[in-house]
Image (tube, rainbow, N blue to C red; front, side, top):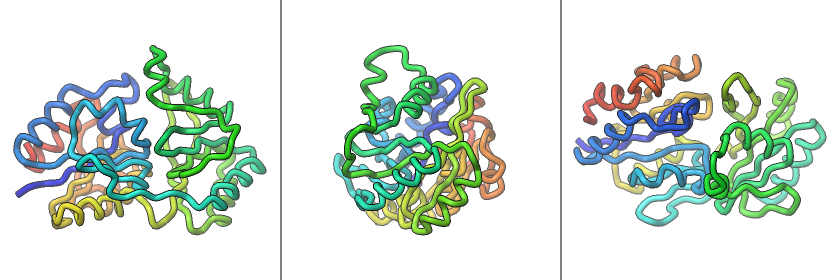
Length: 267
């Protein structure tokens, strides 16, 4: 029976320490597709930030934490923030000394501090790598916003953020590298998340949800793990995701994807 497998990127498919996709994960994906299964990426990244993975020739891409879905060389779902909501969230961030990454399908807009964080986090080795991300300074009005990432210093400010914007969810995302930690939340409308995007993909393909598999590692994968018929946590996943999962595979750098595919007879 054909399975539909949805893979988170950072910390799941991609080893964020080495910036490499394990060879075993690439092998597993190709074997699964050869066996007639469908494999999708399901990430908080925008479609532009998916560029380093397009060579894998997957079956589709869920971007912006469920805000945009690509399949069959077309966009089958596209959510954007209301302009007044963007303005209100930006105002709140400024008042509480938070920093922003505003994400669109044509690039991301960052304030100077957030820009510096991502330059260090991504550690680009070539100008081309940096150009692939389409980063712009947050000095102009931004339209067609699909997602916002908000970097904070005080946990209590996130509580206030949730109270003032009840229609949005703010899952914490682990922006960590080599001992550096930049606490952040992803901001998405509560009607938009990875789980609902999986449902949309399955409906688009006239497939039953019972054939869906979701694999992730961090809090922004919560709805993916809960919604898919089989939710799999990476060995390096957060405690919360492991508690939700039906199965815990090995770490991303210890053949986690390959072992998960093998466990559920995808390969």
